[in-house]
Image (cartoon, rainbow, N blue to C red; front, top):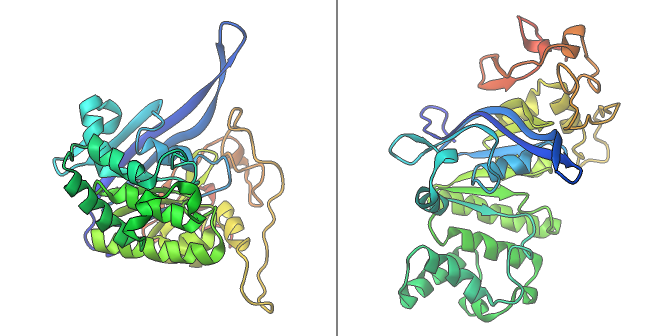
Length: 338
């Protein structure tokens, strides 16, 4: 994606999603699971933003916040619909209905996303009816168009989900999301349940569709090789917070945060003679209920300083590239530990 002219489509400000923990008959709140904790970020129109991190870091909850499938407990999500940024957390029912047409989601498990008791035709027909396309001829024309995009035969519409392979089901889910011509596609680990050979087909298909329809992707995944292939920029999350944001090339060539370096060192090298120094993180991942004071990563960080134990680092720009990092190693003039 060109870095010269960028239009912000989502502006996220201090986003928080805390899930209450209750106890006893009266459901007394005794704590919170801080799934997303004070996240601020701009997402640009037409880009693919990759979101990575360990299981439980909050990346899937963040993706659901972008569609209001999980309502945040604080902060703003401003969506640029051509009339300026509007906070989707304040939308009424009619505004949310219009917004959902512009932002669609592809889930991790394609089988769970399709009703096993309904034929594919019914699954594709329902969202079109919901959004006001009452002509059967027009609905079938749209179905055939989106199926052609994902290389599925139109006569497959009369089959049930169990009659398809995993790759075919995921392609059907992508096609269904494209029916209403969205501007943004949120992909929550869309290929993690597929075989490696099928993953490549689906990823290439998604890139072609993005180029053709000028879509914006939020691509959530735990496979760093897949994220590198798909993404223009990458956001690294740890315990509900952003620890680093950079374009794909910069992040893989010059990672700054110790957590990012540890993640990248775990990527397998397709060369039996390749040598990479693996960075093993010690200690346990802290609980999202009782986060440690200061930097949440300090108990596993090999470069932990005294300030890390008391002060939470802010996400700040570093260097000439559009790279942001939340680490005391790079703040107040620090150059980090390489």
